[in-house]
Length: 268
Length: 275
Image 1 (tube, rainbow over the protein chains, first blue to last red):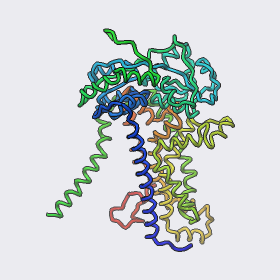
Image 2 (cartoon, helix red, strand yellow; image 1 turned 90 degrees about the horizontal axis):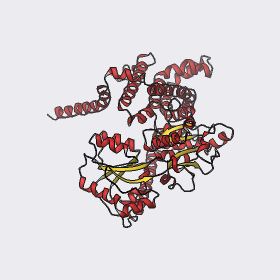
Image 3 (cartoon, rainbow over the protein chains, first blue to last red; image 1 turned 120 degrees about the horizontal axis):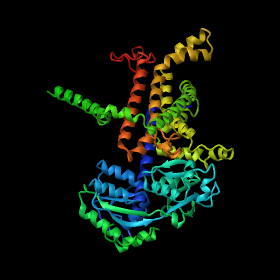
Image 4 (cartoon, rainbow over the protein chains, first blue to last red; image 1 turned 180 degrees about the vertical axis):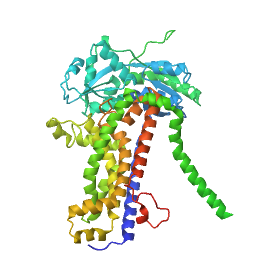
């Protein structure tokens, strides 16, 4: 084997590193260009940060591509806001969490902006042979749900209680930290079943099969959003909320599978 | 004048670094009065997480020592084609983001995974079990031990090994009576790092094993789950982890495993430090 000098090796290393950087830069540029082409007629409120529930990941940027978004479990986001995270708007998948923050004067008065539906999803291969929510009682079914503090987790517990299926909880193999983690585990085929929102199931067509939950067992899944009290740009935050509540914004939400909410009466 | 300024900046930088490292740790204890910490230790979330963490970490460390030591010795003592590739492979989990490690483990051992699909046909599923936690911990922590072990083995004077062989000791006896004792400082240091890394593992665990109290919820996963529910419990678990890590570090330092590195390093400050 011929002797290769240290300088030659270092030189080769530098060339490889430079080539990697060049590839990475071109990938980022291409990705950036593609993203920039994506501005249809969406309006843009800039200079604000919106903390929103994971289920809003796809629809909110369609309504307005301007704000900086941070998506996650509503409970996690609320805890971050309590610890001083720099959010201007907080959008939650339930009304309880914004009400708690409002009681602590961390947000202004919350406003309902949409509703959703809970569904049962299984992988397309359906390894456990599930045909309805009642089949979850079969032993050995790997059920994945969200932690009870997460809105979708508490909705799941409500559904199971309504249907008299709390025994099914012994089949739970994991309590995930947000709804998209539940969806991923099912879509990957690792879990046999999971409870997510119908809007989430639509984001992975072909990977999951959806089973409806009977209407009498559906919990009231109501989303609310509010301006964060510590926001430095309340005017823009209000503009964003107006956009979501506007006819155009609501059309985009319905198109994504969310449900219209009844017009606000007094004493909400 | 210039010398004084440089000296000042030098100590300022060191002081800033030390303060930066100490502040978060001190802050945890300032937030939690010791009475409340002891109170929280009886919380089932904390005790269950403690048991899961310890069981999985200890088994993972045993596997790392069992398989990692011969691997490190092979890579340290022999030169063969593809050796540098092997070393890079062994070091790869170190630079891999834990979430990527989790995805990789799913892709390998998941139900539809490379190895997992044959395992699940045989009735063995790994995701969502305590075994999955052990595998995740072993995967992310092993490079820390193996790298340190390779360095420790490479630092051994080959003349001592040769002398042992010429005096009639077989390869196995040489390994256990000469090589291991000589490298014990480095091996213990590597094991301390691997233990700490394993105890704190989060990303790969939550991806591959999920999170369920009593089964797969380790201490870091419990912190994450309790963060939005009960910040007091979060602080208590954090304080607990700090104490455990400190205890491991201190006990490893105090045992005679530490080799006085004055035997190896000519620096006059190299007393009881890792070799």
